Image 1 (cartoon, one colour):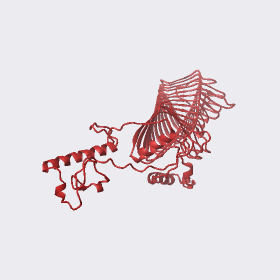
Image 2 (cartoon, helix red, strand yellow; image 1 turned 90 degrees about the vertical axis):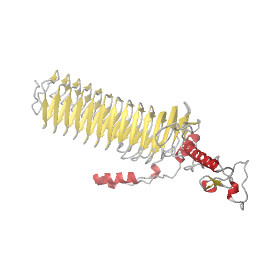
Image 3 (cartoon, helix red, strand yellow; image 1 turned 90 degrees about the horizontal axis):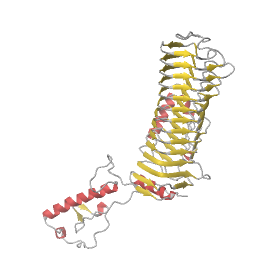
Image 4 (cartoon, one colour; image 1 turned 45 degrees about the vertical axis):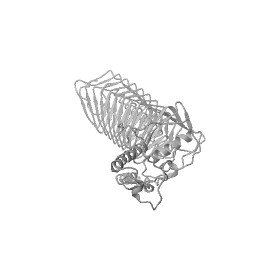
Length: 510
C-alpha cells in the first residue's frame, strides 16, 4: 500500500560527457560550465587561469579535429540514452528510438515513482511485476498541467449545438482524481498478469487519466474497484489524448457522474480496445451511460467481452454518445440499463459486426437501443434479451438501422416488437432471420417486428415463428412505408403473420 503524495518529478540532470579538453574548453569552443558540467576527470588538472589557452591543448590540429568528432558523437550518444535509445544505433519507434522496458517492483510506491519519472522523461515503457497486486490507498496529489484548450473548445462547441448543456455546472477538479500520476506522454505498461486495485476504504479515484498529448498503452493487467465521482471509473481518456488497452480486465469499477458515465472506461479521445473484459462495472449517476465503456470520441473495440455491467440511463455494457465507434467480434451478455441493456448508440455513428448480444435486459431495447443515430449491424446474434417495454432484441427511435446477415431470436418484450421495435426510423433487414421472438403484454403486437412512422424494408429474410398477444405476430406496420421482396418469408407467426397490420404488407399472407 502507498500514501505517496509527491508531485511531478523534475527532469534528471544530463549525463556528463567523457570528453574534456584541458583549460575548461570543449570542442567547438563550448565552455564546460555552460554545458552543465561541474567537474573533470580525476587524472587531469586544469591550468591556471592566467595560462594561455594554447598551452591547454594536448594535441595537434588533427588530434583536435578527432576529439571534436568524438565529442559530438558522445553528445549524440548521451542524448539518445536519455531518450531511452540504444547506443548501438539500432532503429526503434519513430521519434522515440528503441526504449528499454523498465521493471517496476511489486510496490505501489515504486509504480507511482516510475510513472512520475516517465512523465519527466517524456515517456517510458514499464513492466510490472508478474502476478503482483499494487494496492492504492490514496489519490495521487499533483497539479494538473494541461491547459484545457482542446477540451474547453470541445465543450464550447457542444454548448453551441446543444444550448441546454451550457447550463450544466462547472466541473469540480476534486471529482477528477486518479490514484496514479496523470499520463502526459507516450507511456506503455505491460502488466504481466498484475492487478492494480483501489483499497475498499479509500476515497474515490480512478486509476488512469490520459491528458491532452498523452498516449497510454496498457496490456495484461487487471484494474479492480476503481471509483470516480466524474467520468471513467478506471480510465479517462480526454479529447486530445489516446490509449490502447489490450488483454486487460476491468472489474467492479464505478462512475458516479450525474450526466456522464463509463463505469470502466470513458473515452473522449482516441481509444483502441482489444481482447479485454469488462465485468460488473456501473454507470451509477442520475443519468449514467455506458456501464462498461462510454465513448464520446473515436473507438475501435475488438474481441472483447462485457458481462454484468449496468447503467442507469443507457448502454449497460457499452454506450456510444456523440462519438464514432467500430465494434468487432465481441460479446455482450447479462448487462442491464434503462435503454440498450447490451449496447446503446445515441446521437452517434456506430458499426457492430460479428458480435453476440445475449441475455441482456432493459426497459427499452433489451439487447440494443439506437436513438437519433446510425447503427450498422452485420453478422450479429441478438438472442434471449428482454425488454420490460418495447423492443426485446433491438429498439430504434429516429435512426438508421441496416441489419445484415444477422439473427434476432428468442427475445421478449412486454410491450411491442418482441424482436425489433422501430419508430420514426429507417429499418433495413437484409439476409437475416427474425424468429421465435415474443411480445407478451396484454395488448402487445408485432412479435417479430413492429414499425411505425418511418420505413421498413425486408430483403431475402425470414420472419418466422414469432408470437404476440394481439395481431399480428409477424410484422406490424403503422403509418410507415413498407417493402418486402419476394425472396422474404413471413410465415408461421401467431396469431397471424401480417393480418392486423394497419398498413398492408406486400408478399405477406394471413
